[in-house]
Image (cartoon, rainbow, N blue to C red; front, top):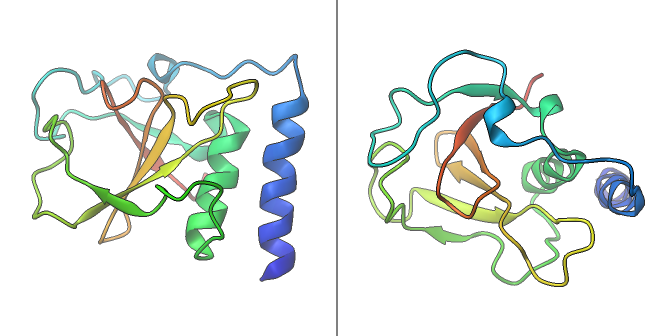
Length: 137
């Protein structure tokens, strides 16, 4: 397990050092359904393959799946879904995790939000929009 976590962290660090790798915008997803924007229950949310997201997102998912350790103390905290862009669930259902951004000196705007039933969501604009993530692809 320690090796897998080290690999995930190393992958994220390597990607962060790569200056030629630009992160795709959420708008470039693979399914044709409209993005979730404004107030919505998540019913029209697009699903994208994890492999289509920035490599740091995959590193964050690997850390989540193995219980950490996480780079920020805020990682794993309850996400309240105050924007109402994800399906409505009781408080404590969702948790958020930082997706590191190369060159950023702060947590920046990218996050993975997980649901208690195993759902994964990605935002690259600090909760203004989300896509559901298929972590198997």
